[in-house]
Length: 114
Length: 113
Image (cartoon, rainbow over all chains, first blue to last red; front, top):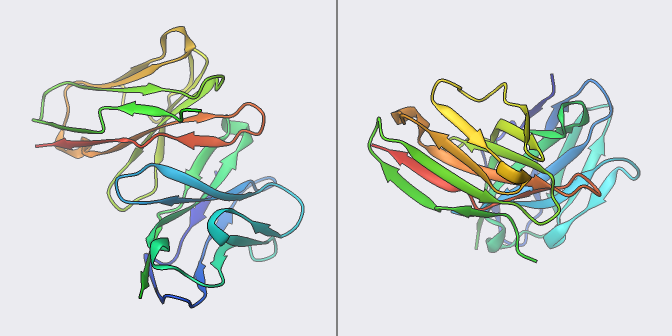
């Protein structure tokens, strides 16, 4: 079975500082990895994905993520955080053998302080 | 293009009452998912449809939950009777057949009192 772990419940960062949200995964085959963001009372919004190719994936709103196969990690990063980046972030893995079902991590709340 | 539409956005009911949620997918998206998201947790799959067929309902509590997707477009998720533990956000998502990207609706926040 596939699984995703987000070890931090919350990350606090000052505006303008780099932001990192950690994610590790466990899959039986090739990993299909995603990051989603959720703002209050909103649905999940897609940020970026890794399917194949370059280990550094660039996504929406200046976010990027680095796929590391040896460490089974897919950390989300942003060089300079904004107050508006404060939200709930979810890492997910897709299982093609199960109808492309997404398995989500528990989420990490990001708080960017001015 | 309109995204995934869900209604109602919020619902408050007393326990033992029935409740239904509605989802209208993005046009052309044949695969539809219902997820449940408990407070402070990631979404968990309840059921997946391929067109009108429920192909994975292994996580759906069938004693009280039911779902349908007539004509392979709109879908309805029902709970009868609701329990306190059903309080959660119910998310509908559909998949782009070209890249299997999942697009989520805004969700229905259910509060059972």
